[in-house]
Amino acid sequence: MTMQERIATDPALDFYQFDLLLTAEERELRDRVREFMQREVKPIINAYWERAEFPFELIPKLAGLGICGGTIAGYGCPGLSSVATGLIAAEMARVDGSICTFFGVTSGLAMSSIYYCGSEEQKQRWLPPLARMEKIGAFALTEPDIGSDASHIQTTARREGDSYVLNGAKRWIGNASFADVVIVWARDEETRQVSGFLVEKGTPGFDATVIEGKIAKRALLNADIVLNECRIPVANKLAKANSFRDTAVVLANTRFGVAWEGVGHAEAAYEIALRYSQERQQFGKPIGSFQLIQEKLVKMLAEIVAMQLTTWRLSVLRDQGLMTDGQSSLAKMNNAAKARQIVALAREILGGNGILLENHIARHFADVEAVYTYEGSNEINTLVVGREITGLAAFA
Image 1 (cartoon, rainbow, N blue to C red):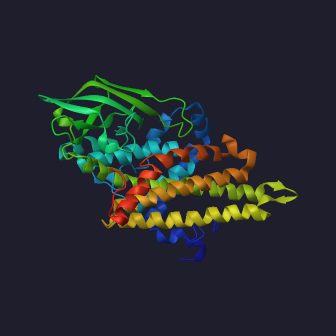
Image 2: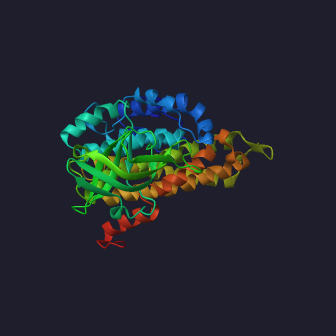
Image 3: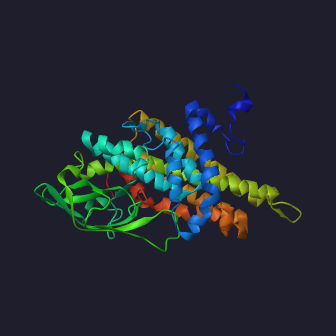
């Protein structure tokens, strides 16, 4: 392989030749998703983001990539490596965070809940159509008054004969207003343990209302859910979801994807800022020739290199069965925080042009705020790592 063949991107965008850590299959997949996002998503997403609407016409096109289900093997899923699955998240976020989260909710949170916690019958019923994206999933854990303290959710499930009856409320649930199946986490009134339930579209007593007024991920439809005597068959209880520990397994195995999402936002911001610095003329020369601009760019690049390598290593550990909760939390915490800083620096480099949607930085600038908060806030992920390295829990 020649040096030219080994460097798949501009050296300024792959400073430590990260490409060389990837297999040929991983590079092919990454490039295919990158091309799709550039061709199908980038030209239209600003308008949808500004209107706070979701581009439903993209769903069959996304399905055509054959990547939904990520690392899940069998059941019509692609059985990808964790690195490949992470690269998908990075490439989607590199163009748009709303599409990244829409896809991640079905491919990650919803399908992982069924895969890790469902019975064989539940897997056979739901995973194939979700993998084909003929069905769309949602994951309902967060509640209006319960965010980080997810083990103390208040939504309840009451057994009545051959049914469970759900009551409660959920908030910030992506895809819930149109999903075919929503994984609702509720406290079983009999066992007092958190369990998962499959609530199908059209079930009486389930009401989802799209949240308006968001400043981040505006093209993603988040919803408030009200469950009022929502009756589902006993067969729709996730067979292996019998405590919050089971929920935590799902979260830990999807959190690594959010760490990759941070990489994608950061890479996009750096690339836009770098190109702008080379083209924007002030005082008779490109602004990239000034020391202060170069300092910002170098700081951005240094953080991105560290983010890429950390997240790649985390994914390798995951595939080897060695990833810990603390490792997953550290990558998410660090990458989200660094992405936030990098996007802010890019906005600075673009000056006033950085607040225009047409230059894309403004959308990343807003969207990364959501990444910083969801899948475990910065503070909670910090304390998860602290607990792992000290053996002492700093929260209940």
